[in-house]
Amino acid sequence: MSVVTETLAGWGNYPRAECEVAHPESAKGVRRAVSSAGTIARGLGRSYGDPALNEHGRVIAMEGLDGYLGFDEATGTLRCEAGTTLEQIIADFAPRGFFPMVTPGTKFVTVGGCIANDVHGKAHHADGCFSSCVDSFRKLLASGEVVECSREANADLFWGTFGGMGLLGVVLDATIRLRPIETTFFHQKAITARNLDELLDAIEEHDEIYPYSVAWLDSLATGDALGRGVLTVGDHAKLADLSPARRRDPLRVSAPSPLVVPFDLPSFTLSTFTIRILNLVLDQVQSHGASVAHYEKFFYPLDFVGEWNRGYGKRGFTQYQFVIPLEGGRDRMRTILSRIAASGCAPFLNVLKRFGEANEAPLSFPFRGWTFAIDFPIGDGLAPLLADLDAIVLEAGGRLYLGKDAFLDAPTFRRMYPRLDEWLALKGRVDPDGVFTSNLARRLELV
Ligand SMILES: Cc1cc2nc3c(=O)[nH]c(=O)nc-3n(C[C@H](O)[C@H](O)[C@H](O)COP(=O)(O)OP(=O)(O)OC[C@H]3O[C@@H](n4cnc5c(N)ncnc54)[C@H](O)[C@@H]3O)c2cc1C
Image (cartoon, rainbow, N blue to C red):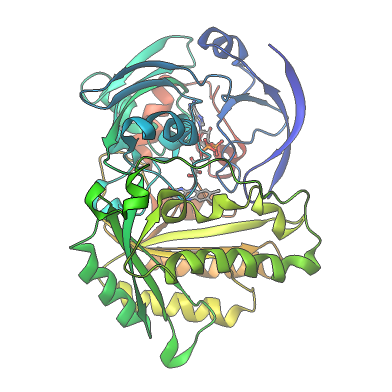
């Protein structure tokens, strides 16, 4: 097994860190790769900030562990190694009539990464987080022991791992449930809203009917137009929903997109590039009102351009995602959107959703409330703006998503996650010497 020094970053290319990266290809190799001087597992590095970085320490790249260990066609239950990606699962199982139960906005993520962040998708209000589709996993602990975790066995470790950011050990493989599908298409509908109230009303109304729901809003709009945007809702298309041409290949899977951003673009191309990305998203949400869309367009419009993160240039970017309770949420959202619009920190991509109920995991991010995610390029005025927004989110009883964050400080984090002490007690029990650590762990004092 090779161990090489590499400069790594998350998807936002901020921060960057020099790490010793091991590339094991088996569970035994993972065990050998764990360094008592400090180790963290890494999937495809699609978290935006620093959870899969470990400056001057060991990072275990998990993509070599991507084998299937069993599949039950009757129940759609798949056992696979933790480095298996959703892209791979879709390519291999969609043609057989199965799709991931929960997926984030990119398919270039590993099962281990989805577990560690307890990722959510467009259907959180209907399906919950990734943990909803995980029956069990095997986990390598700091002691070298491998334990099976499920809702019945080692339940505290099972739940502590979702949102636990890889800090309780390495997930080696997992048993997950896939969703039976008739087609790889979705019927979808777009609703335009002239202001925030209309948009939030539309989300509330349509969440009762459709499992998939996501809105984009014009974050530069102010005054009466504040919060104007487009809501897209949808559901899996049945065979009968497809045109005769599509019915000939209802479980079609896409070939990889040929479009890749070849290098970090200089900042003068930033606006052109991001407008192009934005247009792709808008094309997806607006021009397909009441139509049928392939899963690539429905779930993954951003995957169409490979490595689009380079479009933000060398300084990189961050994504700020928070959730605030529904009660009083409309006014808080208005305050936050006004603050962003007035900031001059040109915001680009954004997503607004309504989450369903929280699950049992102490550090899982979602709870019943409004969630908003927005990209900001790294720039001089950004840190103070984010600190201001943190204060508003905290006062509203909300919190930030660690899968996207790179700026939050430890005291604010502690106040945002009231079950932190419960999780820290678990960490102290299974990893008393802090073998599993990362840049994020040190920043947020999760060690
Ligand atoms: C375009 C885009 C859209 C996105 N949309 C969404 C979205 O809609 N919803 C959402 O929730 N997220 C979203 N994300 C974030 C992304 O889904 C998560 O950050 C995901 O966890 C990344 O998976 P990864 O395999 O790349 O893991 P990495 O980013 O490499 O690692 C993430 C965490 O997982 C841990 N980890 C990885 N493998 C293991 C393992 N085997 N054992 C233990 N710990 C492990 C790492 O230590 C780290 O803490 C999006 C990201 C992008 C780039």
